[in-house]
Image (cartoon, rainbow, N blue to C red):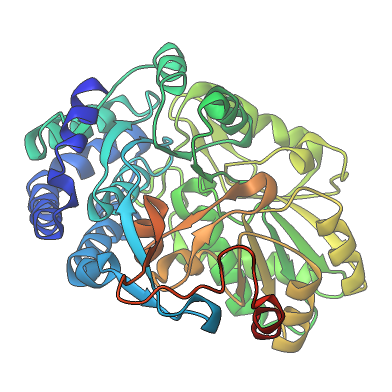
Length: 446
């Protein structure tokens, strides 16, 4: 921190041309370390190259290219209109880097969720200390080697370790903390940084509902929902967490889901090299315990040795059961039914605000439900894909997070917009000075 504060104070990071050089070096470094990172993802998460590239590496490439292309425009000084009462002054917004930042990433997408925020930090002109997850040790080691090979430590550094290291980091004063993880840990981070009034971006999670209405295209819905739930084996903060099926189509959807799952994995998921396994034993035990909360409609098998859990639909669940109270973060899919859409709105709004909201059916009903609920993001007749559009903000609301990022919003997350007024000296209007002799006129102008 001492070295980074000294480096930031030197003013070197304020040069936009220099930032672009660092972004290009970032991209070149990622190309150099792409294979080791993908190999590490395979080791720690059983993640295939295709999924590693689509959900991790490729997104970082795109974010870097976008920043290189647009950072000159993002960083430039902006002139803003001046009201009549402020003339002849001129108003400006100066976008300046916040300073020394801390970026903490989770284990589920350990490359993307560490490096994408770093793109914003580099583009904005901040320094960064990166803290990867100890639950994916191979990936975290390669990430550390990649960053050390690409950036000087006084500019970007990686700190490895467990909860004790986290506690020391969270107790250190930063100019911004960018944290991705659970709401429980986010509260500890916020409490530790509260004495410093540190601005924060919190990307959290929650139980994201997935509603399938009676007029939905069941084949398409089943395919997209199965894909969204199986992606990273459900270990995704925006994975559809539970299903709300219209009671008229429940049985038909279950059959469609089974069929689409077989198309995705013709030989099953147990030995598929395209299916991610659960990250660690404690998570495996928690996820498989949910099978006791309902009746298996399909799936239900698991293997402790490989931490494989089969995609599972679980019927007959109670809203008060653990599987409906806790974020699942795995391939277990509790199923509930509804008759009227108002039941869905009432249920969703009675709980913490989720990170994502998914609806399959007609657009009018979808927009109606979106207007009656709140979530970080939403998809109509799709899952997951709102995160793939860099022109949309990605972030949570309430218990699912605060702040957003991607593209220019990543830049802004690490930026302070400073208001500047420039006033000429060739004229000095007297109306603002005591004894306010022109107050009546000024009052009419305001």
